[in-house]
Length: 247
Image 1 (cartoon, rainbow, N blue to C red):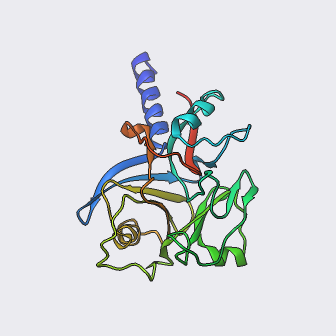
Image 2: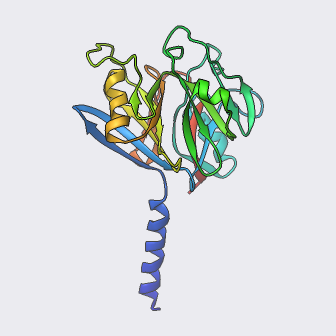
Image 3: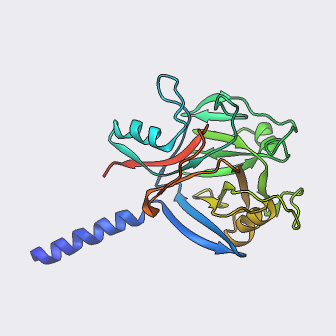
């Protein structure tokens, strides 16, 4: 192989590796703008983060990225991943590295979290899934990482029963849906205020995810270096992200 051909082969190999990284893109659906990040769960290092080894909560993307940089790693993608109390502790179930840090909550309550059915985003080995919370409590799964939030956006291919097509409640919103085989997790943030019905319909009708979970509203934030985007804003609780070697 000539030097030129060897160089070309190396470039193509590098492009193939890059193609495996998190894919983020902007799209429009029914006149609303969204940013969608697709993660292949069997090849990407998808994790949840809350606090460092000293018990200090990360609260911002840059704080987490600085900690990872000390280990020769960086975030390829991240977003807020569930609701939290004033001290940034998770409202419901939270599992990190196989350790349950907060128990599951299955009772109805105030706010969006308590708008049943709510759900659990579970990251297992080589897959990720969204489960309805009471079904999960009745039959726990083996999750390396898990976060509970609510409401569910899509439940077994159907929109949450409380979503209204004529709702006037609009916010920036973010959430996650998973493929039926668990091999793909699709994270979405709206770029303009949307209703729950509009947001859920995106997952059901365009992204075709049989189950999807709402993460939050006003505090919704995205870190997507491939798009030159890292949203500033409120301090966060749980963060979901893909880790890769720093390069």
